[in-house]
Image 1: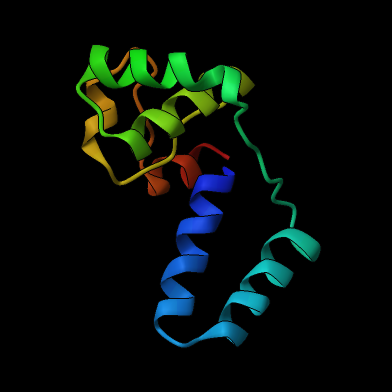
Image 2: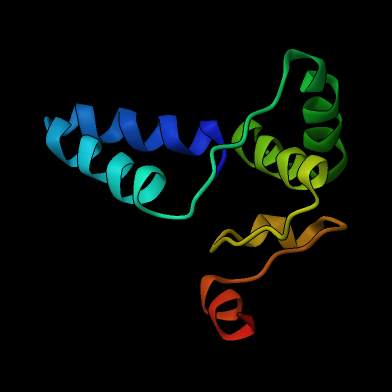
Length: 99
């Protein structure tokens, strides 16, 4: 999971006044689960902008796309915007069936 995704979840849970849910999510996902936290560096900003322009993605989608590209990962998303990229995407169901 990218740091962008984790921080987005954190923002929502705090806005919903559910800090305990955030702590539980972090515990279940990263500490007890097998999920790693990935991040991009400031040096990756040009690649994010290039992906946003090339594939008509907004910033959050471009961030996810570049992270998948950088780390050699498959994008798993409900978001059909990734279908117009070279990497494409798998839906969560497709990813579960493939594993």
